[in-house]
Image (cartoon, rainbow, N blue to C red; front, side, top):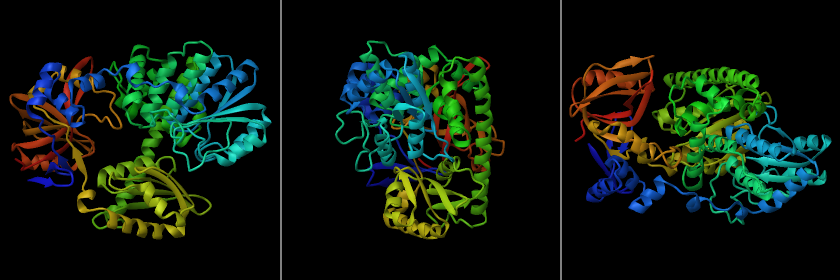
Length: 585
């Protein structure tokens, strides 16, 4: 059945799990642009659906030029002041400390600044905090230790914009603090020597959604310009890794640098990337942004979630093959441990759901806690539960001092940060944004938080808001899925936040044999239409096995991604299914 929804002015149909928003038909204009640009019609339909509507706009998006999207770093507030101070420190041999963060953005930011300053002859060292022992961001303790060790300058990367106490301590101890960050300031700014953050209200830099590594890159670009030196190519690898991993919007400047960085990575694949690629059994010759986001970055993140993140720096920028191999082996082990921890937590929550301790039929938010759940992993499981059940999710780790330390993920219709802000009176601390947040509170307050959030959701959201949805980008037929189609689609890359991989609507396909259930989790089938057969795999959708088995050879609609599968030197075009819809016309 087709559903009309006035607020969205779009057509919807019901799938087995999701409500599908159907692609818009752009008629003759779409066909003319496809012929004019020599690009497959579904790719043009995708671009038109995303508001890229003229030939000039299409070429500008597909072939982004440096001059069109890259502003000058001098536009960043305090940037010139910061590089002048760094020049003095380098020329006078003053000690510089780079203080980063324990996620991939923080690791790559630290690596990039370290690599650049070492090339310029600086006396420089770094520190990354431990997630559990140190917590997030520059602390008073860290500043005091830096002072005792003779550092004259501290440069933060991917943190610092809310380090008020640490900034005051640095000033008191005579350390010049240079903050480079990309997070939104908390009303006022710390009292630091220089603060480079495009989110500052007085910053004229037009691109406001750089990752932390992007801000660090702009500062180092300006510093190398000051020394009349060419910035090393290695930074483009680090810039791409951090930008993709931090899930910032991949448009405009971010899109340009990630494309540039991915080209560098695939042309000059470094030893660390080779090791991470091998760890994940990636047999393909060319890596994409999706490979970085789903296969490469999680290994580095596992280090920050479960161990000492400082080991990432010699791994990412070191030339010692033995160190790279040793840390690479550790990353593989930690990533496997992380996966097992995720499976355990997910099993625990699903068991609670099966026993109706959490009733997903009546409750609109999933909340659960356990003392054995690692605090660095619970956010990942919260994301999976949001995907599975379409409900905001908060998971908590019990700390030794009687607190619950939690991580939350949300759905597009419910701003989690604003919800926590409305309930700040019962929280110890909180932070984040609309889709993800961290928080802590005493154990005796968790029931009240659950009650309040349930009330907030009931008051704000409609049943339509709570329905899980798929946005389908374009119609496609199996006969169109050629190597040229995949090549045309590759021009849309890099895929990521605000430039998602296209999801295609494939009408009226039939199965040519019974489906298979793989590892009790994944469903594989073969679909046929217009004389073409294509394999389809549905990851983590075991319930589709019985549906497809019962459906037999009757036609159904398919929502799927188009993928290239590289195996034993052979490349095929296949489908990764997301959902099916039965009985729609």
